[in-house]
Image (cartoon, rainbow, N blue to C red; front, side):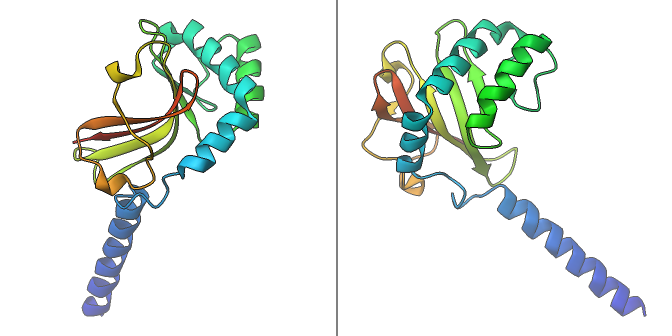
Length: 168
């Protein structure tokens, strides 16, 4: 009886560990492909632009917004955010830097542990010089080949970039 209980506890612990490990996606399985992000930007550019403007105006209420984190925004604006979020992939988060005017649309996050290396991929509006923000590259579809500790940018449109940030 004690042996079955121990085996059950170990199996459960292994299952929880495996789920936690793969949820952090250290192998970039959930990272969207570049063409998927470019298609989203082209298909919903006006929604991205309006969300960028709203996030810049509301950047004093917090650095990041998602559809479930709009409690600091007044109800009228909240409805507009929700309408725009509904046009875009579920789970996306927006980050706005009011100082520079840059705005990030985060589509996927992963890494081994919260205290270890992690990665973030999405679309970013950069009003100024992109090389201040990261290294320009032709593609981001092979994240494992890019060194840790950098931000990589692929131009998608004027002032719009795909980004991959690998933090060590």
